[in-house]
Image 1 (cartoon, rainbow, N blue to C red):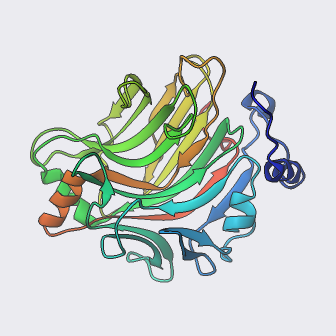
Image 2 (image 1 turned 90 degrees about the vertical axis):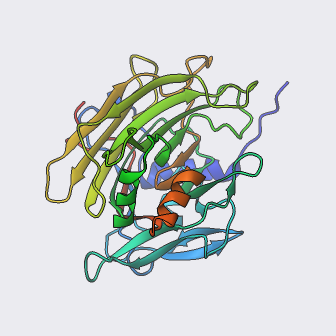
Length: 332
């Protein structure tokens, strides 16, 4: 018989959340109402990267925007979220780092810079991969979330267009319903990535897939659904605003929405998927237990290729906004 374990911190946060943000509401209850703002930050001064047991954390409050703007009080204090930190899983600062730096494209602005020169995350025997990712982990009853952020691929990533083979592994966001490393019988994930087809000079494009985990084989298979969008060519050296909306559901009610707006351009809906957002084998709906909203995760091969071609794999994030539901202008 399982024992009920009461997490008093979560009980307190849920009560506090009902007072500070209002208790969670489903899309049906919300109707056309805009999702409530949970947190936003432009990584401006007062937001600080600090060491955290071999990883890093973000603390402080971005004074350039109004509350909720505090990384601890508002982001981690939201009832549905657990802890936030930046994870590397190996390497030293000369291999990879996340820092808040002056925006190299605009004076007076600051951005979160991910710099990945050497793959140092173990990946099987004598193999490695590269990882820098923001973690929002140990979440509670998280069945719906929307977030918006600006992304700038460093011009060095133009080198990937000359990579002769195709690839699908260059992740920019990952949702875990539930994570494969926790004790859950039905692990499931949704991964948003850059992709490229085989051939020199081929463009980058976005892809997304949802997978179950085969625990016996120890791998993420089979794929439940997968989509690619070659209509939008992903630029390097240009800011883009990305939007993601997730809603828990089955093949008739689950939703994954992703849109992009290049700087100076129009919003383009890249994916609007109605399908499973938890394992079809699960006996009951599974919420998003873990989340990597700001991610840079790829293979040893690609990191080494860019470095050996004279560049470094690096991206910039800015103006991150998180809501408990979609904005009013998101197609429903």
